Image (cartoon, rainbow, N blue to C red; front, side, top):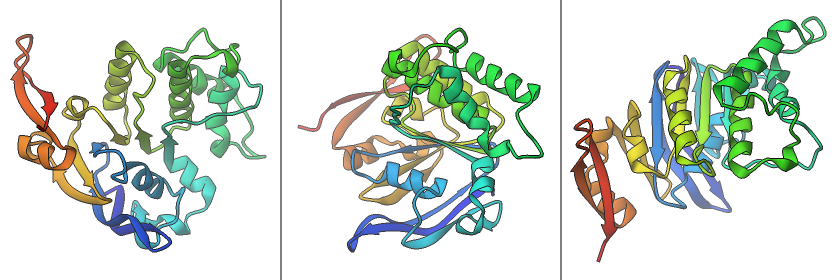
Length: 254
C-alpha cells in the first residue's frame, strides 16, 4: 500500500472532527471520498497530506510515518489541491505553475530545460496553454482551479490529493479534469460532491460525522439506502440510454 491511515483522528478542544479512520490505498488507485458538508472530507484530506498533524492515529507513505518525513520529501511524494487557494502576489500563470517544481530544486540541481518541459506539459494537460503570461488576478475561478491543478501536476507526485477539484469548473472542464486524473500514472484521492462523478472511481469511501462509514466498489457502497441515511435524500437509479451505465437522480427526502 502506498498510503495508509490507522485509527486516524483530529479533534479541536476535545471535539472530534475526524475519528477512527482506517484506510489503505493501493498504488495507482483512484479513491473517491464523498459525504455531506461537515462530514470531515477536507480535514481528512489535510491529515493525509501532512498539512495537519493528527491528534490520534497515524499516516504512512510506503510504510514510512508521514510525520517523520522531511517536508521536502513529503512535497516530492504528495501534491495537495485545496478547494480554494488565493494569493495577493502579482504573479503570472507560469509563475504559479513553476512553484510546483520547488521541491525538486537544490543548489546542485537548479532550474533546467527539463523543468521547462514539465511545466509546459502540465499547462497543456490542464488546457491552460496560452495563458502563461496572464496575471493571476485576471483569471476566473475555473481558470484558477486549473492553474492549481497544473501546479500540482508539475510537482510530479506519487500521490495526488484533490479536495473537490471540480468546484468553479464548467461541465467540459469537470469531465476533462476527472478523465485526466483517471489516466495519470499516480495514486489519486479525490473528494467529490457529485455522487455520479464518484461512480467512475476505483473505490469510494463515504464519510459521515467524521467517520468512514463505508469503503469499497462504487456500486457496492453508493446504495440507495446508504445515500438516504447519509445524505438525507431519496435516490433513484436510472439507466443512460447512450451507453447503458447507471446514474443517480435525487429527490427531497419528504
